[in-house]
Length: 147
Image (cartoon, rainbow, N blue to C red; front, side, top):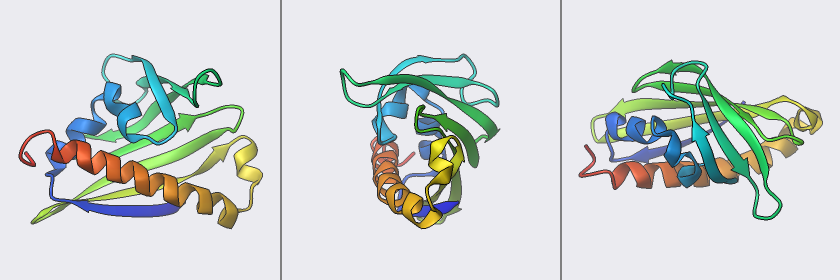
């Protein structure tokens, strides 16, 4: 898996509040264009976010589901984006005296993306995830005085 990190002065609780809000997913995940539905209980294990990927009119409806949830600390996801495939994504929150270090790990899990050589695959994942973490941090920071 490829790893990207970002520090935010927002508290782990503020960052987790964004992660736990399935309707906010499209606001921080690069490539997600809209949310169609969020299962009750999100982000509990097994719950799904029903999203669309791409730009209208060329959108694909798919889902992301929670594989592991440790509230305030860790969220493991399986993000689907067929026909490209599926990716395993981990978002870990590491408390810091001045805020939170957000650690995001991702790699292809199933589908055609697995056959792209890792260095090439990771070269496309890193910039996208850096931007996703920038958005996630800003959302958390703006939820109210770093909570």
